Image (tube, rainbow, N blue to C red; front, side):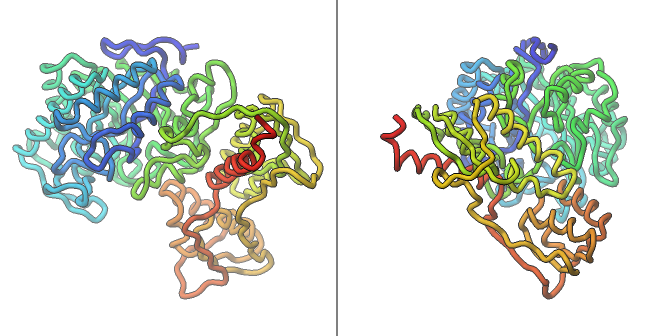
Length: 547
């Protein structure tokens, strides 16, 4: 199968066609240096079979190029020893590693930068209007990219990726909506990509590493450019060994589409392979998605799926179940406030704290087959125990109550994963009650909404978004606009469209029939953690019976 065949990027051989996407993790130190938490996070994906790891975007200018709180940086020789430790660990795990270089430009966060924020043109960046770059600014930025590339070479990286997507500086030059210049850096396609060609040429003269670029194939914004323009950009870039196609500028869904969008959604606009080496990202989760993407690209890039299960490539190769990304965009998108996490994988971002498991023997009873009980069963089986699941209702618990058809489609894949793993471990499910065992019922049960009358709702609890759809089938439903704030942008767009088509009205009011806000709501991740905790506590209390 092509997915597991070797590939070539420039002069570097990659052991297969699986690439871990560059994703913000916030696991580095505030000064941009890497650390063992960050290294273990990436190393786990290398161990899991990814042929190539691309780091999260690393800012090249410490004065005005940083976009997020604990973003990785690469701008000083003082960083070389730790960066060398990172590349050493990835190589020891059998993978190659490229570093993605970025200047955040107009999207640079003033809280994390001491210098003036600038961009190709002084236009609105969703409430911020940066200064327009002068020629000296452009030359300085080019030099900072070259400096970062030299540091990458010294620290053992196998390649360089320029970030030319998602509204950061290089894409700001590419995008006609953001680049209003009338000099040699604006006005025509050739001028808009001049800065990229100058950077890649300068890097070529200094170091011998593959140089690629992450490029938005198209922008989702109203004034965004089309896929035809993106392909034209790709064809005219010089000194570039590969094009990594992503999507988006500011407007959703970009590359991280929620379950309201089809899989391999970016690939649907890349109709054929180009004459350049290409990578493709965007809701690639299953082996069928991989095979579909490889018809139009040379490498497949897994982002959120790599968070859901770092061993996805290995498990695909040996054909055993893996945790599927359900495209909920919950824990993985809370990056303004927290480190990277995954709603369906409690270990993501905490790889450095996961201790070796003690092996036990013996039989245990688990009561309940919701997420908490199912996770408890798999976790206990991984410890060597023989769990028996007891259930008097439907397998899958509250997931069976999901009304949103798009959400249900992706979320039920998680239940199918549990069903497959239960078969893999040979776990017995008994549809009967039992009086003793580990009771894995939900830790928190939210009250039901009345279904027989009109209702106004103000809430951030995920289940009530489904309840609202159900009630709207017979009654008038009004939800507060701020209720939508609990969802990520891609989900807001998709849910609002679905809800309004069902007759739900969104508006803020002075009071509501039902109001419930929970700063730490009981969701999938909390249920999984609770299931594992229930097993650990039970073993502490009864350890001598299972050793």
